[in-house]
Image 1 (spheres, rainbow, N blue to C red):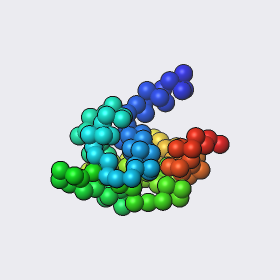
Image 2 (image 1 turned 30 degrees about the horizontal axis):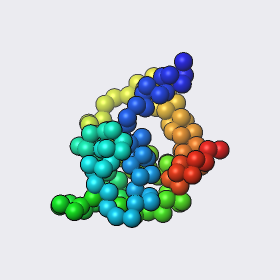
Image 3 (image 1 turned 30 degrees about the vertical axis):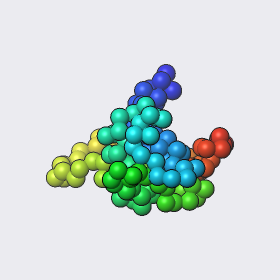
Image 4 (image 1 turned 135 degrees about the vertical axis):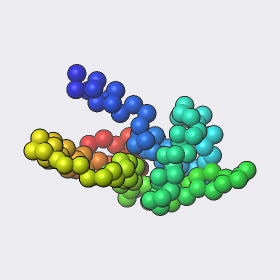
Length: 138
C-alpha cells in the first residue's frame, strides 16, 4: 500500500518531469525544443515549459526563444544531484501567505515533515542525473 500511495502521489509532478527532461538534455548535441520533449515524454509542452522555467531560474538549464530556440543543460550531470533538482523545483512552491497562528499539533506535524525532508535529502543526494542515465541505483 505504501508504494501505491507514493506512486499515485508522485504522478507526473514537476520533479519527475524535470528529471526526465534533464536526462534528455544531457546527451543532446543541439538545443532541445519543448515540442521534442513533449513527444518524448508524452506531456504537454506548456507544463514542460513551466518546469524548465524553474530550472532556468536556478541556472540548471538555459533556454532560448524563437524559431530555432530550445533548451540545453548548463550544469555538470555527474555533479548535479536529484536533490539539487528537488530543491530547484520545490523552491517557492508555496506562496508566502500571511503567518497564521500555529497550534501544538501544527508544530508536531511540521517537525515530522522536516524529519522526512532530511531523509529525502539524504537519499536524493546519493544520485546524480548521470546515475539515472547510466541506470545506477544503490
